[in-house]
Length: 572
Image (cartoon, rainbow, N blue to C red; front, side, top):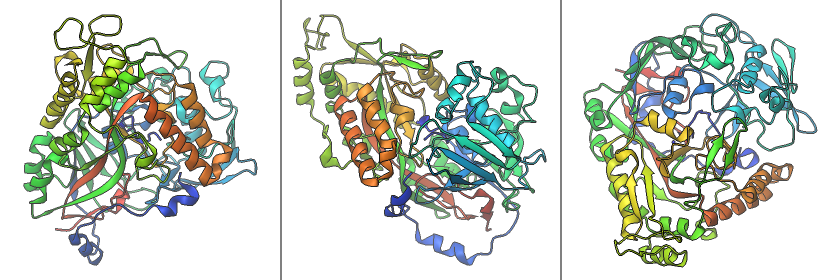
């Protein structure tokens, strides 16, 4: 997964990636257990340390501008803050600043709150945000977030080395800043990087060296309710309360983020070693039986897919180059999806806690296409075989596997990242699905790939990943540009689809301020993607959280369980 997620994430939170007037149409999807009703009657108290568990090692970035993993984003959620935040209706609301929009909808004037302190005691000013935006636009910036500033006037010129600043940014005073965008887009705000950087903390470090610096990797400074106390890479991150947090002193003394093997998570929960964990569906039954743990589930904003390789990324030009033809035939791509029994995979490896989908816009969003508006790629191996035959993929040497139309051996190298035991079974089941219809497939590198290495391989267009499993965390804005725009950095398949880009642009245009038009364009893009199948949609993910009942104040919504963490408290 966003990044991706991403992931994928990510965060990104960011990552990555508005429902404005229609936000009220979305109802809360969180299913709360009866035990939660007791929380309101308990008086919050100070003190205590809780443990939040993650089942993959983070990449190790404490500044969101450089990370691409949802695990890093989870850690950053305790330590960093953004200009805006997102409410339960997936609506963007003021946080560190408020804003006004010009009549022509191109210029946003932000007014920051006064007195907000960084962990090092410095006061937050607009210069910190200006610095962050210009880091992302710097020619030497090596992170994945340029797309969050590229719509600002002058950002492209700075990225290309033609300017030493972003001309569309104007500092009025220490707490007021104007940002002008190149064109009117409905989600200019949502696609604007929201996390300031501690400029003084990074003083003297060249942009090209920031991502590797101790200030980002070992000694971070943030604005959030908790600050770094200690860490052991790959094992844990220990945070302590930041007493001068701008929304009030947090109730907890600290939080430990612990990396844990998913296989031992249920036991750790039972022993009280973990207070909060996003659990895998395979662990749901066992975890649900633990008396002191409650499980919450919600229809989230994540989905899984299989990416297909179409080319490589020209990093200097920031463009996808479609020079890999293995999956060029549309009928082949359709056959690949018809061959997979996605319902069986959900049942076998996800305890039924996912919903098969034929689009990459989760149904949580009001712009999602209805199932009857899309081609339903329901499991049909015979149809897959017929499509292969029509496309010229036939078994010419009698070995049971098809050759390509030119008569050459056809094999797919499929990659999947390492994780719980179910991942191995899932990956092998996908490979077997293709073999069952006559497509020879193998596991890239011969085994599942360590998570961070896997992300690096995708970033670098490793030839071993001809097809690859991916998950993506959409965030609050359904704009698909970040993952599915032709030249987006997270378009790991590197396909180029000008018709799709035009449709995406229409979902963001001035006309899209009309909700009906925006929905229409979103549906048209989904229908286009659903026909082209640049990637193979698998399922929407149901988010599952296991929470020790001693941990109170946790508020789960479609985006996360890490909301208002300064309000968390322990009730023994």
